[in-house]
Image (tube, rainbow, N blue to C red; front, side):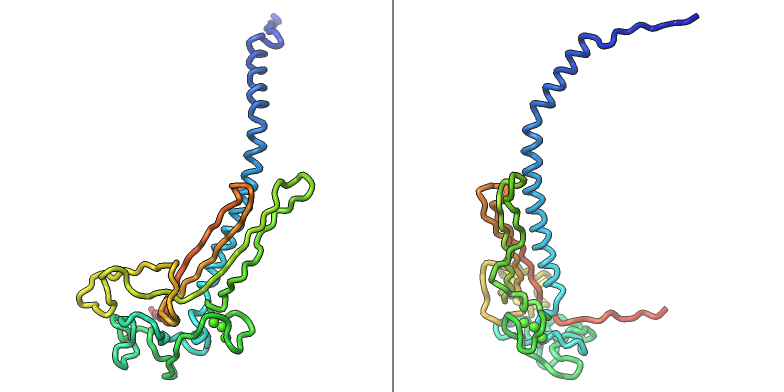
Length: 243
Ligand SMILES: [Ca+2]
Ligand SMILES: [Ca+2]
Ligand SMILES: [Ca+2]
């Protein structure tokens, strides 16, 4: 027997639901468009933040000072003029307080020479940047430009990236120092004060990468700063372990 199920094409209640849903979709459309424009701003900003973060990481990968750039030798700890007293060489040991005698971290290079840390900036004979402070560049460079051409973009925005490398205070924080009092101190804390400048030369270099953008759009009108520091501790070699 042939059975047929009869069903109306569309029930009135379904039609009402469909109309209501369409109305909700249409109501939220302007909101979706505005959200996607804002996420475009965020994408531009995120791009700039990534660029600044990789700039910091890139600089941290370079030699601490020009006097550490000789690739024939393992970098030595450099002498500084305005460092914390506790970070000086103990006698003529070549070492700081607390540095094991077996450590590579010495004030003397393998050939017996020792060196003073140099001034911030590029150095005589540099054909390219080869140490951290060579990247000190107070002149901002344009990082991102959102063109305002036609109706595709709403705002022209220029984000500037500024990189500074400078000497900072290497003094221990609070009353926990000095560093040389190793018998008495179980903990020595250091809090970098990136707002202050130290008279060169010290055992710490501050690296600051700032993003500045001015815009009538609050989403883009933001300043973002990355700070990092690197210490004058010389280099080390990995020992080979034979099994
Ligand atoms: Ca050089
Ligand atoms: Ca250099
Ligand atoms: Ca330099």
